[in-house]
Length: 173
Ligand SMILES: Cc1cc2nc3c(=O)[nH]c(=O)nc-3n(C[C@H](O)[C@H](O)[C@H](O)COP(=O)(O)O)c2cc1C
Image 1 (tube, helix red, strand yellow):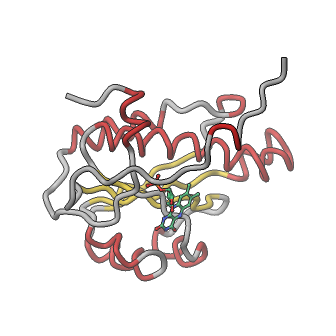
Image 2: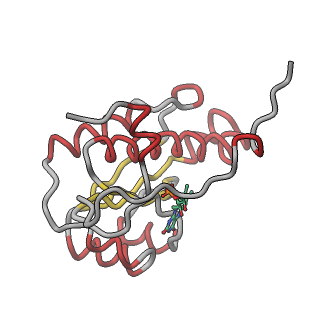
C-alpha cells in the first residue's frame, strides 16, 4: 500500500540514515517508472538513471559526494544528456531545460520512494568529473543528482520549519 500523493508530498523529509535491508526489485522498478513518466521540455526525456547496487561503486560515489550514502542499499544516479538538449533547444535547453527536466524526474522518484516507505535524500553535492569517471559516463551525459534509497532507521521525522505561504505567494487579481 503506497501513500496518497498529497500525503506523500506533505510528509516527505530527507532521510540520511538507512537500514541495510534490501529493496525489492519491483519497488525499485516502480520508482524508476515514476522518474520515466516525468514531464520534459518537448518530451525529450534527456535523463538516464544508473541504479547502483554494487558496494564498491557505492563507496566510490560516497567518497566524492556525501559519505553517508554508502549505507543505502541502492543509489540512483540521475544523469542528463546535454547534447540532446543543445541540439533541440540551444542554450535554453543546455542551461535550463536540462536541469528542469531532470529535477522533475528526480522529484518524482523522491516522492515515489517515500510512497513505498523508503527514505531518500536529493544529493547535489558531488564532484561531477569524478562521478563521470566512476560510472564511465558517455560523452554528453552529465550527472545531476544522486538519490540514495533505503528503509529509514528512524520513523516519522518531525516537520521542518518552512517559510510561510505569504512569503512566497502573490495573488494577482
Ligand atoms: C538540488 C538539491 C540538492 C541537495 N543536495 C543535498 C546534499 O548534497 N546533501 C544533503 O545532505 N542534502 C541535500 N539536499 C537536501 C536538502 O538539504 C533538503 O531537501 C532541505 O534541507 C529540506 O529538507 P527536507 O528534504 O527534509 O524537506 C538537496 C536538495 C536539493 C533540492
